[in-house]
Structure formats: C-alpha cells, structure tokens
Length: 439
Ligand code: HEM
Image 1 (cartoon, rainbow, N blue to C red):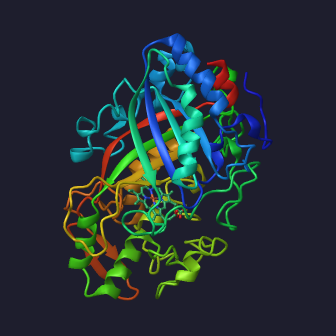
Image 2 (cartoon, rainbow, N blue to C red):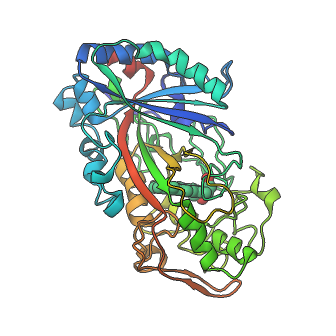
C-alpha cells in the first residue's frame, strides 16, 4: 500500500542514478540484457542490487561513480511479474517507446524500423548503466558490476554503448550541456536556478506526493515505491549538416555564433541569452551560480532576447503559462555524448556515428517526457511559431523555418533540415534497491 509521504525521501532505497547530476567530466556505459530464464533473471536482479549505488551514498570512496539498473516492461514480464501488477504501471511504459513512435515524432529516418537492433524490440529487458568521472574509474565500476551478470545462463548481453565527455566539455553541436536541472524537495541536491521553487519529490520518485497532490506508485508497494521511470534515447547528431546550415545562413563567424545562440537560447559557452543578450560572456557560461538564474515572462516576455521557439525556452518555458503549469512538465536529464568529435571546421559528413544518449528521469512519462517531446519540441503552436518545431532537436522536414525576432535585427531562417535522428531507445523502470532484491 502506498504511504502518503511528504518530502522525507528514503535516499538509501532510491538509486543514485535517479537524483544525482552526472560528474563533469564523465564517462558512461550502457549495457542491455535479454532474459530467457526467469530464475537466472531474478538472480541478476538480486546480484545487481549489491552493485547499485543508492542516493544516500553521495560521497563514495570512488568519487562520483555509480551503477544503476533499470527494467523494461517486457523485462518485468520476463522476471515473472504478474499481469495484475504490470497493469498498475504507466500506460506509456506498458506500450514501450517503439509503439509510441508517432506521438514522439519518430518518423521517417527516425522511425523504429530504422532503429539499431535490438532497440525497441521485445528482447530488451534490463539496462545497466555505469557512470564515473573518467574512463579508468568507469572500467573499475564495470569490473565490480560484472559478477552480477557474468556466466548467468539465460542472461545475454545484447547491446552496449560507451559514452565519453568531449575535451570541449560540450555536446557534439558545440554547446555546453548539463547546465539546467530542477531542485527536488528532500533530495539535498540544489537545483541550478535559485528562482525555481523546488519540485515535489513525487514528480520524480514514485510513492511521494507530486505537484498535483497525488501519489503514484505501481503495485505492489515493495516494487513501485522509491522507483522512477527512466527513458533513454540514442540520438544521432548530423554535425556536418548543422555546421553547414549555420555557415550558409550567416554573414560571417560572429553572425554564425549569434544564430547558433538564437536557436539554442544559450551561447555555446553556456551563457544564456537572457543574461547575455548582446554578446557571449564565457565567464558566465561556467558560473554555476549565475548561468541559470533567470526567468522569461518576467524578463523577456516578447522573446526579443531569447526567442520563444529556441530549444531551451521550449523545453522549459520557466515562468510562462503555456498549456498549463510548466512545473508539471519538468524533468531530470542525463545527457551523455557518444562517438568521436567531428574535427573543428569540417563541413563534410565523415560517416561516423556520433550523438547524445539522452536520458530522462521522472514519475510521469506522459505529462513529463512525452509532453515535452511531442508538444513543446515538435509542435509550434504554443510558441507562436505555427507549424515550426524546435530548430535544434525537432523532427524538421526541410519545409519549416524559424524566426529570430528583432534584436539585433529580425531574421527568418528557412528550410530547416532535421539535425537529430533517433537511433532507438527504451522506456524503463528504475526500481528501488529493495525492489531489486524483491524481484
Ligand atoms: C537543455 C542540447 C535533446 C530537453 C539543453 C541544452 C543543450 C541541449 C546544449 C542547454 C544546457 C542545459 O540547460 O543543460 C540538446 C541536444 C539534444 C537535446 C544536442 C539532442 C541531440 C533534448 C530532448 C529533450 C531535451 C529530446 C526533451 C525531450 C531539454 C531540457 C533542457 C535542455 C528540459 C533544460 C532547459 C532549461 O531548463 O533551461 N539541451 N538537447 N533536450 N534540453 Fe536539450
């Protein structure tokens, strides 16, 4: 039975991967498993529970290193969780990401039939993620986790993705990432924006009161509470195409940087247009106390500085009232870069696969991840852009454009290509440590 609890989070039962921001720099590995044998699958869960780090261990001897384990819906079924329990999980989770392709704008090149096997198939059951501040510590973390899955009959590793921070500390398009994250009541982890009132724990952790006053937790309680939903998506980035588009649509290097900032909402340094509207301020971009403390409706309601349709204003309109309360659509993000960087200045595609392993944590797959992905990123109506989509990560089809209003002068970008292609992904459940033992 769900207990009505306020903000006293049981941190020692919650996976650290749910709440902690990743270290900077970082190295991370995603490992996926298929379970063909229920008994050994359950043994994997039991052993994994000893390798998984809890949110209470915020200072481990190995620094910011952790291992987390998540399960898909077909994974829960393969572990023998009965239908009556599965039916208490979120509808979107039960469908799986591939079945939600249309809603997520995973169409054309991004559609599931083009995904990397076995992503999106019924044969992906368990995801183990290890995160560390550098490759050596990552190898050590993976070595420590290996006994959990090694030589277990009926447990097969089916996919692996290694991720390493770029030397530039940016994602592949060249922007600093991992800047903005919400504060969660009771987590002890400060949010990045002092102007944002911390969100109720139930927005991210199941079994606690959320912003609407409700408590969501799949049943039985031992399985559902202290868990979260986790989404990961392998997003390929067309870096050469992105660079070429900026070059072809600008009058020179300074103009190129301005346009790059106007479509993201931040200069590549991380400095936000809201606080540095005229020119880049690299010192601001690395200042965690200042670079995220701003609002839009209060400070720039017209969007003259930070265009209403840019990536960060769409993904988190902050104090705006667009399609309901913004607080109901916040998310914890964990982006990790994969693939080699495209050397600076190269404008031709070299055929290498590079991009972002996007990860989401939250208690509400529908109103958090799916809403932002489908409405705010891929539907322009709320942002006055009609059929325009997010200019950086939206599923553009070359037909739509993007308007940079006024400052410094009004500009219209046309025929925006699609810069990000989905290569696959999964909807997962990140169980508590006691649920891992129970499974
Ligand atoms: C912020 C890049 C996909 C949601 C950012 C930032 C960058 C970025 C550079 C600014 C730094 C920061 O605030 O941490 C990218 C790239 C993507 C991608 C390169 C794809 C390859 C997505 C997707 C979603 C998303 C798919 C959601 C479904 C957000 C949110 C923020 C953000 C919520 C924080 C906005 C704020 O609080 O100000 N992204 N992103 N991003 N992104 Fe993305």
